[in-house]
Amino acid sequence: MQLNRLVNFHKTLGDPTRIRILTLLATGPLHGQAIAGKLGLKAPTITHHMTKLRDTGIVYQRRDKNTIYYYIDEKKFRSYSEALSNMLYQPEHDKEDDSMKTQAVVNNFIAKDGTLTHLPSQRKKKIIILKHLIKGLERGKKYPEKEINEYIKKFHPDFATIRREFIINHFMYRENNIYELNPEEMWATID
Amino acid sequence: MQLNRLVNFHKTLGDPTRIRILTLLATGPLHGQAIAGKLGLKAPTITHHMTKLRDTGIVYQRRDKNTIYYYIDEKKFRSYSEALSNMLYQPEHDKEDDSMKTQAVVNNFIAKDGTLTHLPSQRKKKIIILKHLIKGLERGKKYPEKEINEYIKKFHPDFATIRREFIINHFMYRENNIYELNPEEMWATID
DNA sequence: CATCTAATTAGATAGTGATCTAACTAATAA
DNA sequence: TTATTAGTTAGATCACTATCTAATTAGATG
Image (tube, rainbow over all chains, first blue to last red; front, top):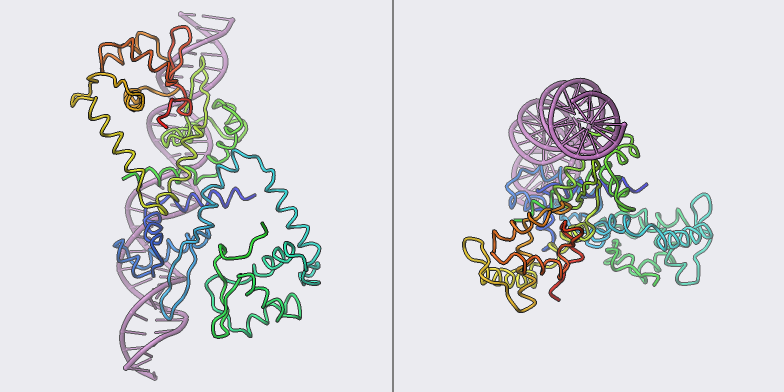
């Protein structure tokens, strides 16, 4: 039941302060102090609101030294905005079909213990599996190469190949051997 | 500032009971008792929620004998759903242009005291004026012809012509000399 | 290490809101 | 007219939440 997530999304937007925060972030990322200043509110209040916005998933954050910058996840935001009217006016058809296909592929290549048997060679299936594998990584967090390797090894010993696939298909980018998740809109897609 | 209406819309959807009510109404109109029964709630609770849904404008009602049937205003619902992401990601351009044109036409044909000087002959302008005139009528309410005449006369003595325009352009329909507002999606449009 | 800055946590306050029961109004039906 | 049925209003209760101050944590810098 994702009814709860939907309710939560709307509850989150049902507050004037949070809407104002979103209008600020729509023009570009900002850090907490800046938001507090522009809205005339104290820091803890901003923390409070950002927690809610982050929990619903429409905002994520990146840390730079001591400062945390907040970003809107535009794609997720849009999809949530449309979710309710879609739910009311098109009673589940292709969507279910799609998620069933995804589920089938995952079942075929991921064992019961969660490890990967082998990477599919067919592109569509490979993308599905890569998406599955990357779920455990945190948006906005910077991973040293060693840490990425350790993470991938939980699924499969050949971390080098899979790590390369992450880069090739734009799930992550690398700079000075530091890895970071790309925003979802950059990821390779099936269609 | 329509920020408030937006906040209110989301606040209204930020409650599981109201979402459940909307899913019920999405398949067709229902009356209060039916909703209460299906959700296992008492009548006053339904009244409470319907008041909020009606106030935001996404639900309207029609009375039949003793019973009140509730309907989703799908068009308004969809437009509200999209409103916030539009506001964040396209900083007002054509919209303003459009509303300025409308405002200009209204200024040209409606005097300072609110009365209509004369009905425009040009179709686009006529539609704008008819929309303006009809604003004071209540959705779902049934008006005897006499009452409609009285209403129109507040704007212009030639009620017969204007009443006919309402019908021709599908702003209202008539049955046994009882008039009722049509849903907005039936109204004649400019484009 | 000592200090500074940004953010979070804890706890208090005041306001809002979802639900109920009981009492009331409105309109039909007998 | 009286009874019945649907809906609304009033008021109580309980839970949640937006905001603040004060205290605390976490990094970064001198």
